[in-house]
Each structure stands twice: as structure tokens, then as C-alpha cells.
Amino acid sequence: MNHRFLTLFAAAAALAQTGATPAGDILPKADELVNAYVKQNRFSGSVLVARGGKILVNKGYGFANVELEVPNTPQTKFRLGSITKQFTAAAVLLLEEQGKLSVNDPVSKYYPEAPEAWKDITIHHLLTHTSGLHNYTAVPEYRTRMREKLTPLTLIARFKDLPLDFAPGSKFSYSNSGYALLGYIIEKASGDKYEDYLKKHIFGPTDMQSSGYDWDTTILKNRASGYERSPDGKIRNAEFLDMSQPYSAGSLYSTTEDLYRWDRALYTDKALSAKSKEKMYTPALDNYAYGWFVDKQFNRRRISHGGGINGFTTQLARYPDEDACIVVLNNYGGPATGAIARDLAAILFSEKYSLPVERKEITLDPASLDRYTGTFQLGPMKFTVLRKGDQLFAKPANQTEAPIFAEAEGKFFLRAVDAQLQYSADASELTLIQADVVLKGKRIQP
Image (cartoon, rainbow, N blue to C red; front, side):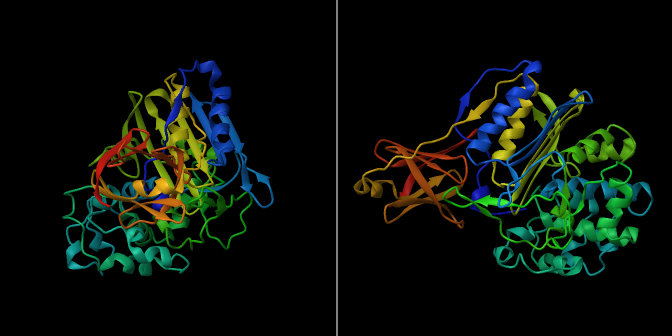
């Protein structure tokens, strides 16, 4: 759900290559990988890896509460962020099974106040992020209004009158607005509150007793506190977010073990019929189906989704042809979660994977810093490097700046994310490197 500088870049870093891993070495190799991130203060959370109905890794790392030094365990409850969307999608499909709606119904059938511009938007469009609804968490006011308590209707009012980004069905654009509207439709069609419908029809039948709607006023045993990395890389408490705001787009909590119960249930008819699951796993545009991305990783079919919400990042990846599941829940926020999930899959499938490198800062001659400042055109992005005193900062267009640190002359890194900047010898060109993402461009302004 979050939209800030720290999550602009895809997760990963320049990494140290290691070899493939035999299946019998999964636990020690997984420990080595995750502990490398823990040591660098980039991960705190719980991890589960399973295959063939057998749990191979099920451990907590770091602290659920840093102040009290309460350790994370497999029973720790984490905010899920956008992993919530697959449960919202499942609820819609259950209501369709019950004859209470159709995914082809227009939104206006359940929300009569819908503006004329929404007349062609269907539930299917909401589920697949093809509605054209502008993402309410991307508007500038979102960050300054996160403490406000909202009803579903007042939440919808925040984006109701915004122009559509495109004609419904014509493009894919990830939109929390669509999934917030789905929560309201679930309530109208079922007669239950969103959270109650999920509890009765999804969490109950699948024995997910450690999952639910994460209201901040509830006393919740084993709840993890959320933390984030400041621009200089230090851990701090995450900004408060009233949990009425993410609603059906990102409000749920769960554990690694409960998400594994969900994985197992999806191989049966406990949660959904075979027909509904076929719908849920069929991509529309850009590999997005109903609450899941469906693609390939290591030449294996993957059904997955991540989440990001103040203080938490999450990843659930299922490999149905391998009967494999990976869950990574992180209460330090930041992008390491996706990299860990990817490399745990590599360990599981005996593919090449990587350990993170801990970068060392050096001090450059202050007289040399000005040669690195300026604005560069990196692909579609204007990227500015500016100087304040003896510190350089990176600032993508319309985003918050973050400090960068030298590891060699002409080579810099960020502590908040795993990204590096490399200059040409004359500093007229800049390259941004992060995992498989490499953007190179020339200085367009001094």
C-alpha cells in the first residue's frame, strides 16, 4: 500500500553469487540467507518454506517488538498489506457461488452513487486492476491524512470524483481504489461486514484462527509492531495508519502458519470450488488475475502476491505444479522481503541464489562532491543528485530525497534500499543498478 521513496525501486542489490543447493541443505542455507539480512538490519520477521505437504523451514527472526525485545516466532501476527487482496477476491468468488453477485455485474448495481464515468466498470475490472480508477494511496494528500478514521463510503468518496486514468478494460494499473470498492460490494451483496464475511466463510472453514482484520484498538496476542528504515538506514517506529484506510485492499493480519493453511486449502474445495479457482488464477492484463499475479519463476509456474503497509512488507508465493509454498513476513518494512522470497525459492529448487553484500562507506574529499550533482534522465525517470553540506542526496522526480553514501570514487549506495549509483569517468553519465533493473542516462541539467 505504501508509496514513498523507500519503495520506488524493485527489491534487490548487487549480490554475491553462490551455487545451487541440494534439497537436503534447505534449512541451513535458508538460515544463512535470512540471517545475512538480519545482520544488516534489513529483515525481522517470520519465514516458512514447504513442499509436498511438508514444512521444511518455519522460523522467526529478529524482534516482534524491538523495545521489549520480544522475538518473532511462527505464531507472530503481521499486517499483510496487499496479500489481503486475494482474500477479498476469494470473498467475491464465494458470493458468486452463492448466487449473490456476478463478476460481470456493473459496479453501479451495488453502488448506485457511482458517477457516470463508472457506468462501464464491472466487478471483473476491479478484481484485475483494469477499471481505470485512480489509486487513492497515490494522491499526495494520502500521506498527510493517514490518521483519519473512515467508513467504507467516506473512503470511496476520496476517489469517487477523480477522473479515470483510462477506459475500463483497456489497460492494467494497480489500484487500491478498486479493491476498496470491492469490500463495499461484498458488504452490500452479503449483508455482512467485510471482516465478518471473511471470518465466517474463509478463515473459519480453512482453520485460519490467527487471521483477521487488524484494528489498532483490538488487544491482539502475538501482534508484531511495525518498523521502517529511515533514509540513513536506521530503524524507527513506522508512521501510524488508521486501519480503516486500507480496508479490503490491505487491512488483514496473519501468520506464516495460517497462510500455509490457506495454501493447503486452495488444493481442496474448503475455500473455493474448482471453477472459482480457475477464475481466480486466470490472468487478464500484465499477469494479474483475481488478487494474484500469475507468472513463471525458475521456469516454474508461480502464483504470488506481495504486500507493503506502514512498517511491514510481505510475500506469499505458491508453486502449484511443485506443491511448494514460500511465506515471508517482515516487520522492518523495506524491499528485502521480495529478495528473500526469491532466493528461498532458488534454494528450494536448487537454482543459483545470492547473499547480500554489506557495503562499506568511505569519505570522499568534499571538493569532489559537486562533480556528482545534477539531474539525469534515467529511462523514463528524471533523477537528481543534490548536495547539502558534505552529504549527497538522491531524489527521483516528485519523490522524497534520500542520502547516498560513497563506497569508491564515482560509486555510491543507498542504505534505505538495495540500490547503487555508478558514474562514468567524467561523471556525465549515471547508472542506477538494482538486481535486474539497470537504468543508464546522461546528465541533462548541471
